[in-house]
Amino acid sequence: MTGILSQYMMRTILASTALVLVVLLALAGLFEFIAELDDTQGNYQTPQAILYTALRLPNLAFEMLPVAALIGSLLGLGALAGNSEIIVMRSAGLSVRELAVMVGISGGVLLVLTGLLGEFIGPPLDFYARNMRVEARYEQDDDRLGNETWVKDGSVYLHLQRVNPEFEFGSLYMYRFDGDRLASISVAENAGIDQDDKWILENLRETQFQRDGVQVQESRRSIESFEVNAELLGSSLAKPLSLSAREMLTYIDYLERNDLDATKYQTEFWYRVARTSTVLVMPVLALAFVFGSLRTGGAGSRLMLGVVIGLAYYLASETLANSGQVFNLNPVLVTWLPSVTLMVVTAIALSRIR
Image 1: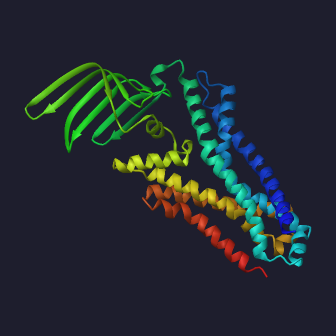
Image 2 (image 1 turned 180 degrees about the horizontal axis):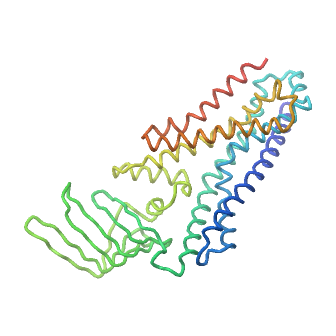
């Protein structure tokens, strides 16, 4: 009997959450598309803007799933409570803890879905969408196609003037240091990374600063090996939203080993973990609100409550995450605080149910 009830509640919660998510994605996608219409240029026109918006939807779904799970659970469980079905379950001998476990199973399913979206589906599609947009905008202007960046590999600093999606560069400037002393400056007219992650430098001119003078060396083709491979270089160019958790951890490790600031990526990583974990809590939190006065309320009151709590959680999470970077606060603390607060509120609310 418990298994049948669990499946019934799961279907109710998942169906309501899916409906809410579709509505939220429709609104977010519309706003995203309208914003893109203001930036059309070159070959990036309305069809490409539609494709860009569609490719961004999985990442938007990942961001909205905690709020969608809360609103959907409130609507689904509220409908069960309004029809006295939850009261019948309590009368049949189910405790609040057993109901919370049954509802938590639905949260577990949503947690897995959120993890898949945030790790394997959303980031690569987001990365592809952004590259597609840049290529379409500047396809006829090679000088603007690509990104400029600085990377560090131990005592070597590399300045890449233009990096395209195939990891072919324009001019490359390389600065080697010996402790605090500048040892050499090198300039390559063209550079790139091959399939073996070797750096190919063409028409390289190196100026070496020695104790007794300056020496200049030139070579038509030079092969260098750096810790910075194509994957790390791509991570340095991509926005944190376009990186999976695994890629962020790899890039954070690279930044820390080279004594570079990794706060932005640490904050995004822990924010993503906390937001994903919150999906598990939302249905249980909704269960705590379907008892009492909310049981007799309509769908409008439940929807309003879900929107208020969801917006409060979203605004608190965004504000704390951004403030943490500005004031150099602990990324784990600022990103987990809203989620932990929700967990405490959920535990207190459930404990007050008789």
